[in-house]
Length: 148
Image 1 (cartoon, rainbow, N blue to C red):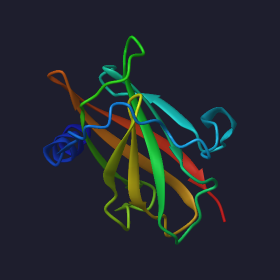
Image 2 (image 1 turned 60 degrees about the vertical axis):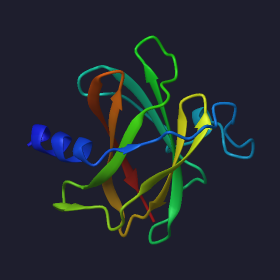
Image 3 (image 1 turned 90 degrees about the vertical axis):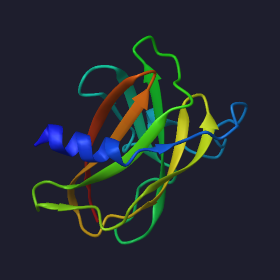
Image 4 (image 1 turned 180 degrees about the vertical axis):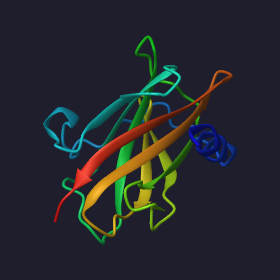
């Protein structure tokens, strides 16, 4: 099942070729270390480290919001340009996300903005980030709980 999911997610990769290498993450976003929804994971094949957090916390049920994803290689260096895809859902309920989030901007230092995320109920959610960089393909799964 993971192979099939990874394959489907990576087949739909969107290449980010934005020429904004000097941009930086917005200063008014909360520090990831202070955010209860700041998530970190190593990709399934251990090629990349991924951190993910909402731009505004906490993410509210039923509203659209954006998240920031940062991808680094195993040495901790930001990867760019990189092809990314976003998916996810509630495995316990057997359904995916109610929206189709998109990577919309490169903010510098390996960080990208994901827009169009919406959770339609409380519970355990998974966001999956498909990654293609330097001839490597991998996927990171980040799980978290959304409460009312």
